[in-house]
Length: 318
Image (cartoon, rainbow, N blue to C red; front, side, top):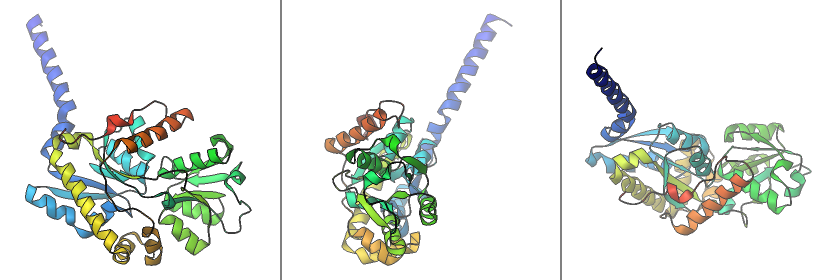
């Protein structure tokens, strides 16, 4: 084989590798589909229920698909795996996701409120304070917003993170474990919290008041944002509008969520009464707060690397 032939084959192989590696990006750029990831209760669930997003993207030649996830960590794993383009979660999941290399970008947030998550114990439990959790089994969804609540609550009570035994359970399994006594306490968000209080008589050791802000964030996958920048504003604008409508009709919103998520209307009305509906742009104060969470998680060994949250913020027009 001549040197020229070998060189030609080498160039051909290199070109093939380039084409293969570029294929996912090309597909994202060419496919006019908005893949939405959502949880049972939240702004994106309302978007799905009301069909607002479909109406707004149709004139632009886009279609919408929906995929449900049990919690924020699983949803952001969907972003990393390239399964969804848009996602939402509490404050802790994006920290773990960014540390794991997920190509996510923050695009907005809702101040969900510290009362929307709590540490629960059974009604007859001898546990009376957070300090009493030492040596106990605590169930939570690994990497979720309540993970940070637990860290902050333990610290305030003078306990170390290693002083408790963690049992990582998604919400449905957490509820089952709580009912059966497999775990001594359950750290959970709404509406699971209120449902457990009403139906099981669960007691709240503490909610997030004075400990966490508990913001709810919206994200876009970076490859999608680069290929379809106009869709970021469309999705965020639709989210803002559907939440503005929801805030004006709590009973109606509770009925919508009840039909979609299976929670009683009374539970959802109580849940919605103390959460935020104001969709806001990402600002420096929120970024700084997220950075404090990231630094805390790195310090106690929950993430293996130091991350810079500001690197994962979407820049309008970028």
